[in-house]
Length: 145
Image (cartoon, helix red, strand yellow):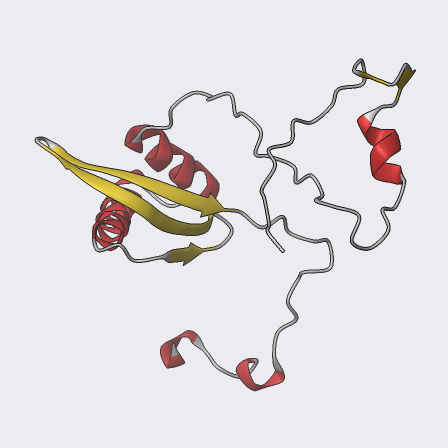
């Protein structure tokens, strides 16, 4: 038995098949019998790039949200960015929720640095995902940490 791979193009709502029009939603609503052929998988959608966040804006936003002084926040944020940059340079996978899971896919050395392609996966938080404090950690103070 030989297997062949067919490239399928998704049909639009205006495409005609045998004189009848059928939308994607109508096709998706009908369950296919087992072994009825390949199923279409939704492809990634294009993202329109928004404005760039630079380090100054990051520091200002952290200062605003945390309420700490800028002179205290700036060295911490710069150290954190250094640590993250070094981890990515070492091809380490980062799991930093809620920012997401970041993994280096491939890299290329350039004359002035390194080009890295990364994959970022963000998990959508569910409404009931608020973790309840554990009983064994309730009696600890910050000196134990």
